[in-house]
Amino acid sequence: MLGRSHRSPEGRERLKEVIDRSARVLEMPENWRLGIVPGSDTGAVEMALWSLLGSCPVDVLAFESFSATWANDITAQLGVDARVLTADYGQLPDLAAVDWSRDVVLAWNGTTSGVRFPDDAAIPTEHDGLVICDATSAAFAMDLPWGKLDVVTWSWQKALGGEAAHGMLALSPRAVARLESGPAPRPLPKVFRLTSKEKLIEGIFKGDTINTPSMLCVEDATDSLKWAENVGGLAALKARSQANLAVLTKWEAASDWATFLAENADIRSGTSVCFRITAPWFVALEPDTRMKAAKQIARLLNDEGVAFDIASYRDAPPGLRIWCGATIEVSDVEALLPWLDWAEAVVRAGFTD
Image (cartoon, rainbow, N blue to C red):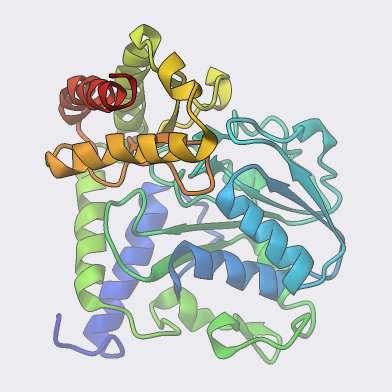
């Protein structure tokens, strides 16, 4: 299939298989539409924002880098009447302050802050606006309350452990009704268009992608989804992620130099697990030097072939971010722990000797 067109009958079948298996593993309601869209999760979120927002005011929750990006796009680019509810890294905005009569844009899991929604209790089952949820580091590892959400997005890159410039866009019947209720609220480039003549472009949700996908990445995504089914589906995926978090929780409790960025365990992510470095030697450094020291710890682990890309996100407090989604083995997390302590000790010696 790698040399075949994605427009061929076989190519469409492969793309539809990714859609169908994803919906099945995630236990998505049958009356939802799910499609493959360009631009990874970012593309999927932007398609939703540009296509759906504008008919009513918006509340947007911004508590880490990507949710802050959605807030900026909504206010600065789309010019929508919006209220931004913010929180520092490691915290969630005040969920009691959200007005669910408005459209609400949120990230279920803060990929760069290690903070997640505690549960769906804050979201009323009946709400006037649409709830648009960026779930890219939550899907396949956490429960998503489909009955309380209207748009859900994710990418193959995060939870499935794959790589491609493809995102997934899931629409509830209420979201489809909004799309078909009238002309798009603004001019849309082709890659953002979900309707034609005020009707949903159904082909997008049957494997007719807007862009040209990599068939290699399609095969990889299919393989990941088959693996997810074989290990036990969503329940098993959640359990694997939580087991990884449990290993790090035990280590953090005994650590004298690292603490969870999300201090409240009820909102602590089980996938993108973020740590703040709190050792006295580190806190005494100037802010710019702290960032350099944290990056040195991550670089040492990279150079040893132990862990890759675990430095905190560039906008987050200096520290470490360890991916603990379902594709990660508990034994590998356990093997990482002594290396973390070793790298911190080496860097500490360089600043204190």
